[in-house]
Image 1 (tube, rainbow, N blue to C red):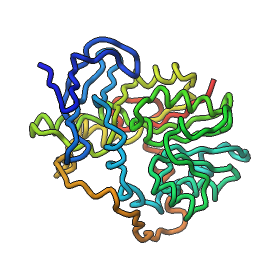
Image 2 (image 1 turned 90 degrees about the vertical axis):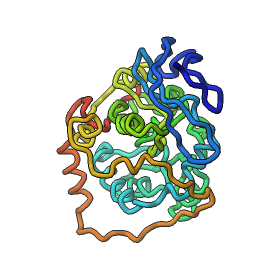
Image 3 (image 1 turned 180 degrees about the vertical axis):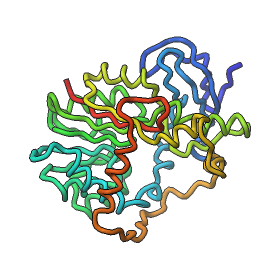
Length: 323
């Protein structure tokens, strides 16, 4: 039996999957929420053809702006900066330079780290006006505000595009990847970090099954991609896989029920008060680490990755080439 929500969505009204175009009636899984206030209750449905799980209807931009209010940013700024430094040295082609774009760059600390550790010219895109203002004024970065499609970059402008945990948040993933391809030169690289959809949504489903109340979508993800869906998106947007890795193995096993959960895991899915959208960006004090700490942690983390795409992991790291 299907259920109408506050915006009148009914899973039986599903016309086609926005990822694969499939028209089979999707499976209704649960009713998540992003904010506990005067918002509609959404449905999480699963495409019967590509296995993508997605929120229907897609949240309005107003709701998303509330979810990504200023307090969302800055809690790990020093880690992001250090990660950018390590990435600039370890992942960008050695001895080369070019134009580097970070999509969803937040406050810009990762981007600043890349700029400081390489000869690449750094650009960013971010939907939060507060975060963009911080990146421009405090870090002197070239960051544009809004969706990628509205950023106005020329065709084949970039050599490297970095998309870290963003694809699952955008309202039209295929159009987003096609725009990434348009602004990349031929043979340019796209770095993509994206959750493994079945594992990423498993705890939310488990919470709903045991508690019977709409779970808070702590990640704000709009889409939960299967491997089939990701490969389809790459083909349709004219990318080929250069390398792929699976990480978050222990967390993936826990989410899928093959490893014990941490005590109190349900607390992340219970309702919580809405923090006013006017909250300011507050940077916590930097934690002092010994020299080389973050480079060590980076190498350690990569040693735990499995080559290829595995169902048991929580996240995928995929490097794509524009064809």
